[in-house]
Image 1 (cartoon, rainbow, N blue to C red):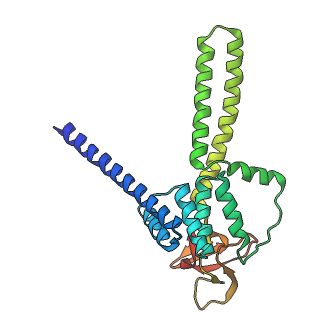
Image 2 (image 1 turned 180 degrees about the vertical axis):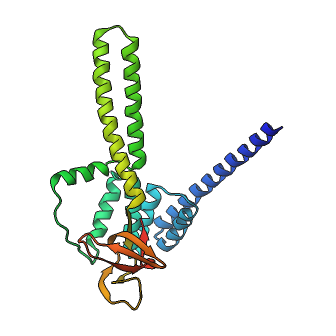
Image 3 (image 1 turned 30 degrees about the vertical axis):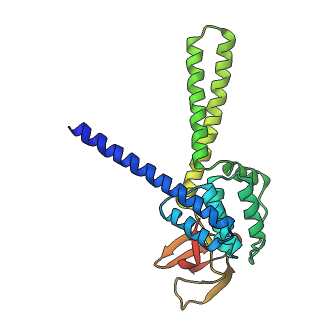
Length: 253
C-alpha cells in the first residue's frame, strides 16, 4: 500500500517536472521570437521570468545579455554575459561579447600586471566550471580504478607496466583536478563578485547615506563584494579601492 502511494507521488513529481521543463522551453522559444522581432524589452521580460523560476543556462544568460545590450543597458548586459561565462568559460561567443561590452564601460581600472605563472594558474582555474572540474576528477578516478584492476587481473608484463604508468598519471591528474576543484569551490563560497547596474553610483566611506563620498563608479564595472550591513555592501575594486554602496546599485554574478 505504502509503496503504491510512494510510487504515485514520485510519478506526479516527475510529470510535474516534465511539464515545467516543457513550459520553460516554450517560454524560451517565445523569448527568442521576440528577440528576432527586435522587441528586446518583451524578450527580456520573458527571459527574466524563466530565470525567476530557477532556471539557468549559458544560452539563456547569453540571450539576456544580448537583449540588454540592444537597449543600451550595459550593466545588465555584462551581468548576464558574466553569468554565462561562469557556466561556460570557454564559450567563444560569450567571451567575445563580454570583451566587446567591457570596452564600452566608463571605468577603466588599472591593475598591476600579474606574474605569468599566476596568469597561467587563473587560466587553468577558468578552463572549466565547477561541474566540469568535478567530472574531470571523476574521470581520472575511474581511470585509476580501471588501471589497478587491470594490473591485478592480467599476467602480461607489458600490460602491467602500462597499467602502472596509467595509474601514476591518473593519480597525478586526479590530485591536480581535486586541487583546482577545491580552489574553485572555495572561491564560489567565499568570494562574491557583482556588476554595477546603475549608470552612476556613489561609493561612501561607511554604510551611511550621510557619510563622505569615497569615489564614483559607473555601470558595467565588476567589483568584489566583501561585506554586507543592512542595505549596504562593502565593495573592493581591482586597484584596491574600497567603500560602501547601496545594494540596489549592483547585482551578484
